[in-house]
Amino acid sequence: MKFGQKIFLITFAFVTVGINLIGISIINNNYKTQLDSRMNNNISNINNINRALKLYNNTNININTLKKDKTYYELAKEGEILYSNVLFDIEDIKKRIETEENKIKSIIVEKFLFMSAKTEEYSIILAENIEDILNIREEQIDFFIKASIIFSFVIAFCLYITISFATRRIKKLGKAVEKISKGDYKTRVKKLGGDEVGKLAVSFNKMADSVENNIEEIKRTAENRQNFINDISHEIRTPLTSIIGYSSLIKNEKVTDINIIKEYNQKINEEGNYLNSISERLMEIVLLDNKKLELHKVDLSLLLEEIIDNMEFDYERAKFYKKIKTNIEIESDKTLLKSLITNIIKNAIMAYKEWELKTIMIVLDEYIDDKTILKIIDQGSGMTEEQLSKVTEPFYTLNKDRNRKISGMGLGLPLCVKICEILNAEFKIESKLEEGTTVSIIFKSLKENN
Image (cartoon, rainbow, N blue to C red):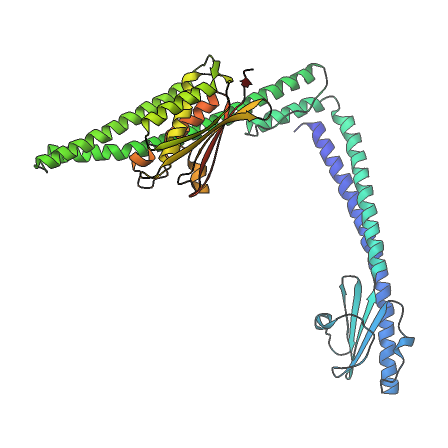
């Protein structure tokens, strides 16, 4: 810390603390003086009542001649209340200010001063409203706080101007650099003028933006890659274990029955094909990450008709209902677009049980802001909210026993999401269990061909 900064901090601290201590002391002393005065008056009233009780030896005394405004009394003899003009519950207060014989005890609760006295026969409780004293104290504190804040700002401003006017902007830059070096990448410097220091601040903020964006991107990429690697390891381990297990049984001649050997060979072949399918899909995703597209006009209406015709041929139990607006063209990549739509329709078909008629609704229509929405709707099994939140994760399948004939390998929808990112389209999926699923693709650069 520089010498000028030390002088500023020490002087400001001493002056501020001294002013606050003096102010608090004056306010507390004034409050104590007023409170002591009220308590002395109340003690005199209590003593007068005690003298009257001893003099007359009865309760036939007029306490009202002794009481003041905003003061309440309760007189009791051996626990029995003989007189009270208290208008509120004081049972809890009685327990707190219960005193010994010939002594007086006091307590402040909210805006009342409670005092109690006790003789051999009688006990007296007095309650006085001291709201006026408390209000005066609050007003003094409020005034002092405001005055203290203003005075502190004046002192700080004068010291700051005097000591560090010439270096304050460089100090701000230094603090910002220090924060970023400690990992606070959101730190920015406010505008520092139009001179060299100001231009340096602008360059610093640009650098900080770039650093923050790069750090966040690195974190996201690292996390996604780690999750992806974990999923791949888990997905590959199962078929590899099966292949090694079956082949070991055959190699070590643990099985000799030719039919069982054929069955094991069949399973080894199936698991090998599955591994090959995974590698092909992974390669597609990797290639998409590095692919630079040249977009061309694609008639989405005609492409949909073509895809549906192929699907009707491949899936005899699938029934397609179409509501497709004609002459819709977009700037896109036809191959990726076809792969995207085909994958989604296949997922919709797989949402039905094997024996069910698979009804698929395909809707293409205009959307707000010169956009177009493509909806692919099925009435299959649907998904829970938890399943819906995970369905676009790699290798996630709805079928818990991971039957690949039913649920696939879990790379279809992640591939669709990746294609949508590349085609600058928005991917949405909605689903309800036992009611069906709706997948929507919103094309952001859509143009209607007139």
